[in-house]
Image 1 (cartoon, rainbow, N blue to C red):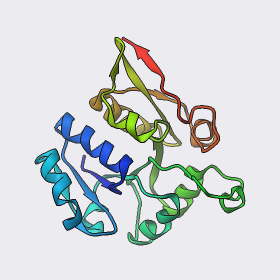
Image 2 (tube, helix red, strand yellow):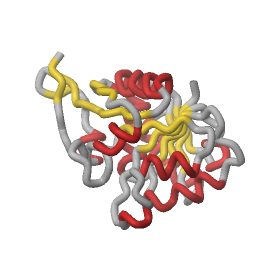
Image 3 (cartoon, one colour):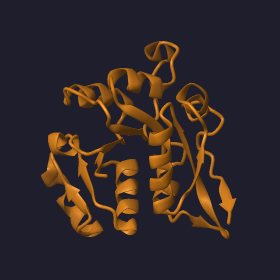
Image 4 (cartoon, rainbow, N blue to C red):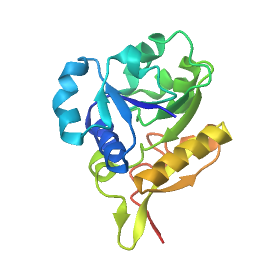
Length: 195
């Protein structure tokens, strides 16, 4: 399984740190080009590789950690998303409900990526908490996962476990994804699962 992160802001960087700490190879891309991430990659070590967008989109699992409106440009950069797992780590801040057409933001993303197996995850924590160690008070910080594809959901839950989080699968996007949407009850919840 190969991984990439699209976006090197706070969420993308937090996830890149977790990949590095878990010793899992990941490429990271942004709109400014791979050279803009050289310092970050050097800081995080050899498992994090700066990439251009096209190379990053070749990964089996692609994480969207970009402003929500930018998803359409990234979606258009790849002719076929068939079979890819796409992790939606975005939140639709500043997006009017009318723009979402009554759908959860993850449903809008899935519609823009025909054939992709879209999973909502890593979005409910503020970036600073996402970046911090998942071990907390004799437990592990919870990360919620929602997807229409059970295999993709399990794959992302496994990745979250490798990072040290306690994943909780919420079912399909139409139900669980809405709990993680911008005004959903699970957004910004810092829950700890005791082990």
